[in-house]
Length: 158
Image (cartoon, rainbow, N blue to C red):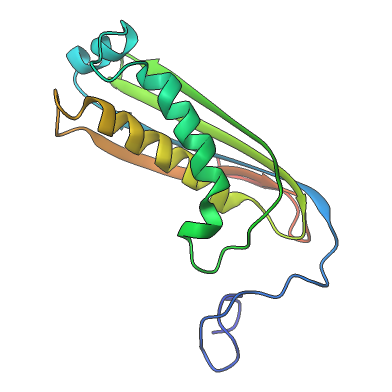
């Protein structure tokens, strides 16, 4: 299992020991989207969804998701998150919503999982808020686009 840090020499899953790693500034950016019909998108952008402000509530849900990542991903370290920002941008050409999450910390390990969880949680919240009018929406394209900081340095996903 060489190269996979979440497995010990016997191949058993374990939480990586980061106690000897230096505290550094770290950032991660993730993105994804949810596609829907033009009518459902209009319901959201015009503020006509029965459950309220879909994009505002999804933004808050994404922030909460980032903060709860260590509770959801078994081997993920709890981190002192210093920033979570979500952008939810309606796109009539999808049609749907593009979601981007930026997460920062000063810590001993990165925040990639927090950024990915933020996007996922925001997309699921959009789905939940308008599923009464459309059940076949599709969440996809969730990926890490940037990570910086720590020993491995900068990664950019084109």
